[in-house]
Length: 155
Image (cartoon, rainbow, N blue to C red; front, side):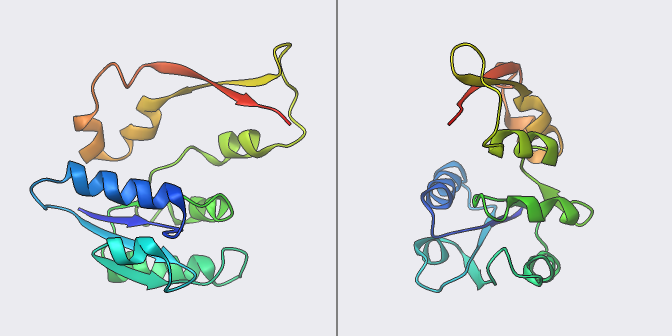
């Protein structure tokens, strides 16, 4: 499986790459990383890496689409919050391991209406996240696939 991890310079991407390495003891998967600079730590931790434009550039999605085709990407793991909105339009090309756009917009809403406890309460299902990626869906235990509540502090 070819896995694309984006925003490879950030702590989330570095953690994802290290976890994938630890999980893939048989070396069956190839990790490809992207970032806007070649100084990104994640680019050096991955098997292969690409420099891409910033997510706010018009050609960001085209650059990612080219990588998806060229590297035969099976799943994208977006880790940068500035680029997350861009990936929905690539879902016809490959699997994207993220929540749907509606959920992401709700979580990023700075004008959210908190509960009396000061939290936005969002119910989600990990099963939903895993079901579109066959490899992961077969590896996730049933306890991880149950519904959970996320408590997101509102500003």
